[in-house]
Amino acid sequence: MRSVDADNIRTLPLFKNMQDEKFEALIQPAFLQRFPPHVTLFERGLSPDFLHIVLEGSVELFARHDDRETTVGVIRPVTAFVLAALVRQQPLLTAARTLESSRILMIPAEIVVSTMRTDIGFANAVADEIAGAYRGMVKELKSQKLRTSVERLANWILREQKGHGDVGEFDIPFDKRTLAARLGMTPENLSRNFATLTRHGVEVQGRTIRIKDRDALVTLANPDPLIDDPELIF
View 1 (cartoon, rainbow, N blue to C red):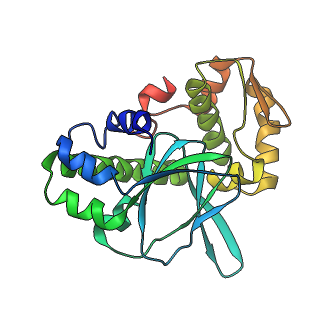
View 2: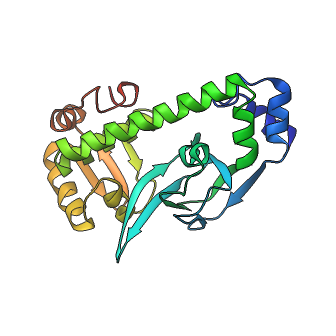
């Protein structure tokens, strides 16, 4: 790993409060790797070998049961994943694959676990990361159970708009089938919901979304700070 990469990684919330010598020991066996799109990083049911951190690109967490498959989540920079399975040393509940060209930091699982036991700053950061993931899961569950599919789509568009700097136009960062699974609907429902949104200030052409009347979209979405991250939507 290049020293400039190590310096950048050192500033991430997960590592910034570590002791210097512990960070150096943690990062020494790690490596950065760039993966092309649609590469499977691991399969469900296996024990985690690495802590993965997405630095560039995006990764889809997905699961299968019988002949069905669904998207559980989409990981985007800068985020660690499989941390809970690694800490508990339990099988991975999902598989993972890149959605686009992605740059991922991979740290061997055994050094992550041993460092947690000897560096309080790192242990606290791990606990905070897992707590944040848990709260995100509860918010996602509330959204799935309390909102209609078109309301979920409307709130997703508002979050994406905020993430793109409040622009009036942006591209969906992955294919529509993945978006549909991510939001808990079929591709056919997604198409119908996009059509519905034309009455609420949204125009969709291919993967491009144009927001022509944000107030109308907000009225439909009815965002809730106990479901949606306020800094990402309000």
